[in-house]
Image (cartoon, rainbow, N blue to C red):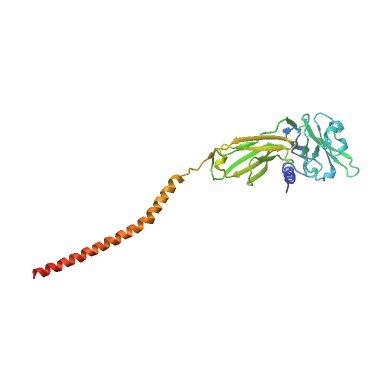
Length: 306
């Protein structure tokens, strides 16, 4: 399942939770403001309810337009279900991600320009089945409009890492970056060759998403003072990066002490044990001879007494 499919499922769940398909009132849930990276894209989450009951998408007509302007005029629409009624400099750059039949009015704007700040409002019309003509049931959610906060530079990644790495032991670094375009998520890359990288995408709040990359590797002594960099590549050819200098704690090498000691112990065991066994053997032989000598003298003493 790709990222866009996952996002569409999230949008559908959002719409089901936030609104009722058979509501008896016109109501919309739209974020008041959201960051938008110039040249990149932005997704505005939106859900709504209407008085028409349970209607399919074909019976609903949607539009996003400039607040305070007339939505029926092409010059004011940044999106319209009828593509011919979209303002020229927005054509091909806006689309509805949500299913209107599921009360989802989520809007995507791509190739964001520095003047796309809005504010923009959502309008829905109930249409007849014949000729797609509108009925008298229509509503502009002028109290629930969104304004885009234009960003010329992307957010820098945030790095979370332990203070120091230990030579030969697993070390984990987390790189994360915030964005507002879940349909074209940023790509996070490292200047480190490893296969142990895990990537997550999650919704934080109100159209703000986080992409996270978790890097795990085993540092060596040669990696001490090496720069580790995480780079975020955003849709629209915008990049940003964060880095830090890796500090590797070395494992002390005691070979210059251990090897001579081991050799000494080995030599002692090799030559010492036979010597001990021989000394014990000779000691037993001497004791035996002393006993024999003592026995002989005892016998001689008894003979001389007679």
